[in-house]
Image (tube, rainbow, N blue to C red; front, side):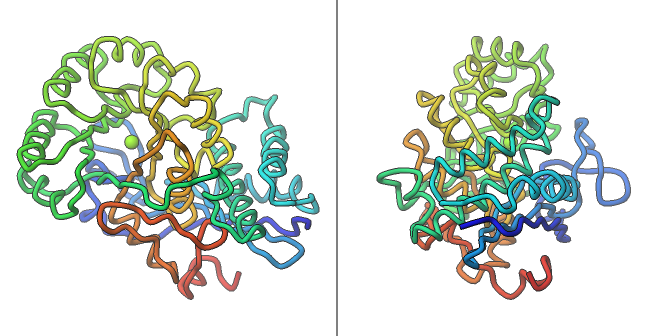
Length: 383
Ligand SMILES: [Mg+2]
């Protein structure tokens, strides 16, 4: 078979920011005008919309694979990279559906801009979106779910943890989280640390464990003192405590606290993660930034660490890929769950991704298991 077309579709859906507040993609209050606004608590820009980039790859036998790049802002960037840089190097290439064949195409894409320093960021997001589409095709060619191509005995279910909670008081937030019946809840640190600790205490009093996503803004001078308060409460992990490029600060913090540090969403390859190996015990690859090829390589190279895929704003392909990775990687047994994200993804799927009884059910149909419904035409036209 040969690859006959590679297309990319920027997606921008309106969403109810108020109901999503405190969860992935909208963890903080925002100020400003327009669709991109600053957090009121720390210097990060967020979209008021649900933005992502869908990728479609077709073969000359008529098969179609779908992938997705993580693109919470400006999805046109990953789409332009895909169509201008990656499409010409992929079209007309042989595709046999083997892991080695996909790895060769991944290396070809990575090599386009490697020596110019484009070995991360938007470039890898685009490569990862294509990578997911290639794995989807591989599964469809083999008539097997992707997890069965990645591992000899993949899991069929993966436990989920609740990512974020909403409410105006700590008890309200804990009560909201309790409705989902999941044993672990991740709290986002927006601006009030003591309020977060009270929410954590309320969760624990209800029998739930908690983790904290610090959104990269613990003050370095007080990070140890704050993290020791998490130690005292037996936090499951502390995610993204400091600026992502501050490797030394992360390593120093890890040496001073008992709570495991979790990192991964800001890094796309093993190369980017190696300097942080001494800082974190939990790695959180994002499938829309690392793809399946590199995420499996990360899970293999860091076999002693726990893998917990990062799932932020995502439609079906990214979510399904995270579930397949979790099913296949032996050092993974947990995946992020954001109710707003899953509901939005499922609104476009004829066969919804399932989470019941506290576990994701790994799609068992060929490929990633993505079957679009007619609403996908709203996003990608007649394609
Ligand atoms: Mg995070």
